[in-house]
Every structure is written in structure tokens, then in C-alpha cells.
Length: 211
Length: 211
DNA sequence: CGGACCATACCCACCAGTTGGTATGGAGTC
DNA sequence: GACTCCATACCAACTGGTGGGTATGGTCCG
Image (tube, rainbow over all chains, first blue to last red; front, side, top):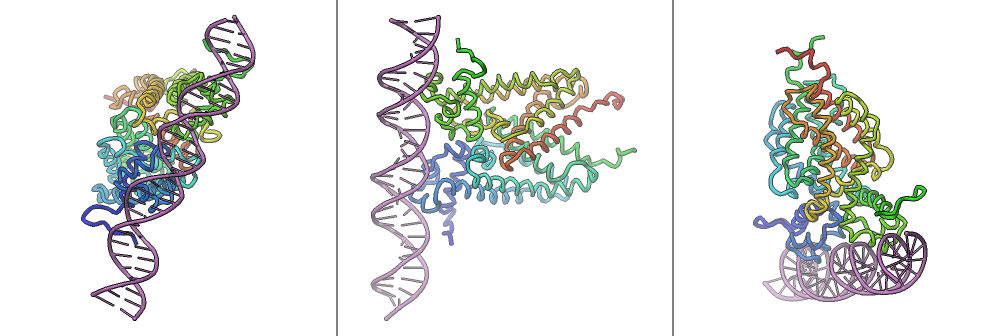
């Protein structure tokens, strides 16, 4: 259906989506101009309106593209092959910390940025962002649920809520990083998140219990 | 200098600032139109441009206004009169949870929203947002530092980093609330935050310490 | 009167979306 | 194989509504 990439240069639609990821993460959705996206993708507006009906469809397509791209990115990371679910969960946090490199628009979250500016005005985009966040949280929740079964079976918190909490910390860490102009604060936030997970899921939990 | 409010109706400048708080929190800074702000404030553009040189100055003034308004709001809250710093800290989290009422633009954070869309394009607004967040975090850090001295004197984390972490959780909780369309997720995030603080600062810590 | 305050009418730059094309390549037909 | 037909992909120039900002004049108050 869609033209395949030849010798490493992706097709125009993919380049437009990649460009949209960068521009929207840098400027936000309302301030992101279609011409900026086109310029970054190396195509003209005519090409853009051939592939997308408008700016809104671009945003939704970008959110879906973001979901599949990050999904593949995380599922292919090294920590995924660890046997212990708690190792995978802590590995996830460490991995997220390790990718806080480069400029802010390169490691911050597209849908977290977009949902802030569209939740009250554009339900379609909000839905797309919600799908993306929920899907990613559900992946994290799998490891949380397994780790909970092993290390904190009687805990009062649910795996889903803890997985969503990790996402809240990460999203909030991005906001602080943007305010501060660098990823340092975000790293410290992930350190606190890791400490919380270790406190909730103690490995030598049986030794310590003494009723 | 500025005209005082008469019989409960604030002056135009204040009404414009209040209107800006709502419009920017609902639509975001770039999508917030000056005319929207004027309409909500019940004044015309002529009045607006008498009080502000332009949209950017409005944003900066709104951030400063937000700082002083929230500063007064929290310093006047009931939990502030508790004697124990840990009680004040947990009271802060409970209080933040209790104000998650009404529509989203009424309880979400102005500067957290604005900084996302301006950090890369408008340094002046970014600075204003950073000042606001940092000032609020510094207030929280006072109680954290006192509580740390009492209940976790040898802890490896600093009071400042934990205070910033609380802000990250709150900001991230707002993003999830916007994505989900309601404050439920945010409440659960604050429950996790409270649990973390209780784990880091155990009240019966002296009993347990035995060097 | 003079200045603070505010309203009306207007200007104009910017940008989403449109128009009207061209180039390429594949399917079908003889 | 050559030729038509057409869909896909792309481009450059234009348009029109929108919204930030201005020009001007009026009103109230000290």
C-alpha cells in the first residue's frame, strides 16, 4: 500500500511523522506550524496535504506512530530479557534514566506534551494521547503485577495504579526538566521512583517479617 | 498605584490575570487568544493593551500572579499550623488531594502547562515558570528538611530533591488527569506519594535504630 | 487641564488549507 | 511491446480567516 523506503531514506509520510515528533515536542501542538514540519521532513505543503487531511489528523497519526515506535523501542531494550520481574521493573526505570541524553525535544514525551494543550479543546487528540499512555502503562503493569505477586502479595496498592504512578513521575520529571533547562532534575526524580519501588517490593521480604 | 477593588469587583488588571489563568490552563499558552481573556475578564482589547504590552508580558505577569496567589493559598491552609513537620508535609499532600475538585482547568497548574510549550521558544516565560515552581518547591523543602532532621537524619536523599520530586508527581498527576478526563488517577498518584513519604520518614524510627 | 483608564475601529502578518498543476509507474488492452 | 488510462506522489503559488497589535478618541477623577 505505502511506498517502501529505498536505501535508508524513509517515505515522505514517515519523514513527516518523524518531523512532527520533533516539532511538536519542541513547540507544542498549537505552535507547531505545518510548514515547520514540512521543512524538517524535506517536503512541501502539497505533499503534506496529500498524506494528511489536516493538522489534527497529523497529531493523531503522530500519537499512534509514537506508540508503536516507543513500544518497539522498549520491548527491544536489554532489561526486557531479565528473568526476575522486579529486575525488569527496576531495569525499566534505569533505562528511562539512561535515555535522558541530548536536547530536551529528543527525549521528552510527545503525548504528555500534546495532551496538556488539547484535552479541553480536541477530544480526538486527547483520546489518541490517552490510548498511548494507557498502552505503555499496561506494559509496565505486567511486570509490576508479577513483581507484586512475588515480593508484596498482600500489598494494598494495585499493579495498575503503581504503573500509572511511574508514568506520572516520568511525565512530571519532564516538566521539571523543561523548567530547569536540563535533565538533571529528572534523573533525581527517577532515583526517588526507584527507591519507592524498592521499598514497596523488598527482595528479602520473608526474612524481615516477624508477626 | 493600582486602583483598589470596590465592593468585591477586582480591578481590570486583576480580572485579566484571573481570566488568563483559566484560559491558559484550558487551552495552553499559544492557543489562548487575547480576545478570549478579554471576554472572560469583561473588558475590551483597549483595556488589555493599556495594562500589558503584549501576550508575552501577560504570561509572565500571570506566572508571577499565580505564584503569589498559590503562595497565599497554601500558607493559609489549615495543615500549616500543625506542630510536627512530618504532619505538615503529609498534610500538604492530603490538602493537594482534597483540592482536586471541579473541572480540570480549575485545579491544574498554570506554570506546569505553560512551561511545556514555551521552554524552547520563549526564555522569559520559561524563567517565570521556573521561578514559580522553584519557589513553591522551596516552601515544601522547608518542611521536608525539618522532617528529615527528625525522622531520617542519615538519609541519602536531600530535602531539595524530595521536594522537587513531590512537584514532579503532582505535575505528572495533572497530565494523567487530563489524559483520562478526570482527577481519579491524580488522587491515586498522591496516595502513592504519601506512602513514599511515610516510608522515607518513619515516625517510630528511634525505637528501631540500634547502633 | 492632564493623566489614568477604557472603548471602537482598524491594520496587517501569519499560517492552515486550496488550487491547479506535473512526474512516475503500474494495470489493462491490442 | 506499445499505447492508453489512471492512481499515487509530489510541488509551487495563492487565498482568506484569524488574531496580535495599533490608532484614536472618549470619560472620569484629582
